[in-house]
Length: 110
Image (cartoon, rainbow, N blue to C red; front, side):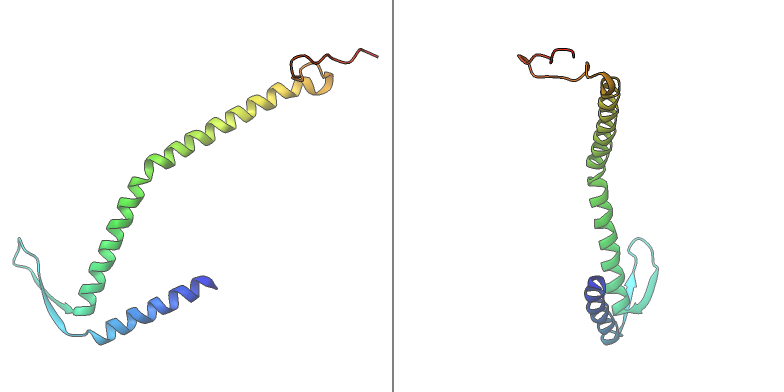
């Protein structure tokens, strides 16, 4: 529901922009003599979309280092949790492998 509340006004503004800017503009691509005529709204919105995708790609590449570091940390945590579980398993039945603070004695056998 929240997504619709955010998307509908943005789409409405984009449609109104496209409908009100239908003038044809000439787009020239510099190193070549290629010229394209397109509506102004198409030219502006396509450049905005291209810049958005370029910025998203830069942000994604900037986060690669942190995502790989997080994956390494998750693997390390999983390995340490497995080691803790393996250390606790033999001690579960006997009570001999339970770590106790220094200075505390084990209860006398009954």
